[in-house]
Amino acid sequence: MLHPANGPSPRRQRSVERHSLSVHRAAHGALINTMKAERIVSGIKPSGELHLGNYFGATKRWVELQDRCTCLYFIADYHALTEQWDPAKLKSRTLHMALDLLACVADNISTGEIMPAGTKVLPFLSNIPEISRFVFAPVDESYVRRALIIKHQKQGSFVVGGSNYGQGSSRGHAALAPRYLGLKAVIAKSFARIHWQNLVNFGILPLTLDSSDDSKKIRQDDILSMTDLRAVIQKGRRASVRNLTRNEAYQVEHSMSERQVRIVSKAA
Image (cartoon, rainbow, N blue to C red; front, side, top):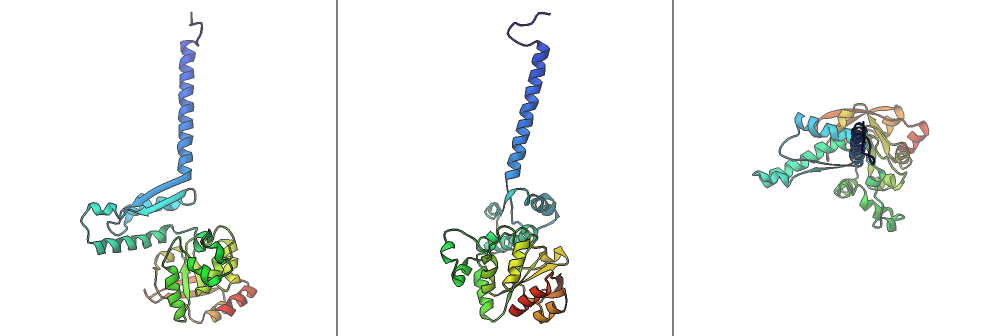
């Protein structure tokens, strides 16, 4: 069989084309997978209460992705204006959806989100009252104001977190500044090891929920109570936290040593 002098045979040409196409597809697929592994942007419209469709269609997948990608999730409140809405009702639905979503996806809160760094904060590293103004600023700008109100009432406050609470850099100010604002205990599904130790060192009690679902039942500004905190942690590892707002109780435990119990008891 005669073949063109300057090219491959027709059979070889088809083989080269197929090989080239498969390489292109493989490279394209690798590019897509790489892009997926870097950043996810997704939103939800606050048109009503969260339901099973939201769970299976969005929030369940969001939770799965948050440990593998940089995830940017948002509530598309302006998009909801395509329908007629009472402004006050829309604002309320947006707020409540935010609280529900935070209960689902607010794992891996980092020390950088508890106590941010940067040029605004750096000049005040040795000024605890001043640096405390930035606590939780990236995730809740109202936290400091509300914490100070409770502190001035001679009461303590709780923070309720998700899994791996306090991950990231060691950043001791992420425990020290909240302690200045009156934080008595952090209740979470689980803790990052170094931040857990920093909480203890600054007299903040780290408590782990028996049931991770209980974190979804607690809402911002609920009144939580632990009777005679010092006696409870000295007596044993298990305790009960009462939600006076919702008339519920949550079982928690600590894993502190006797020495660590003495440290926290001094501050309780």
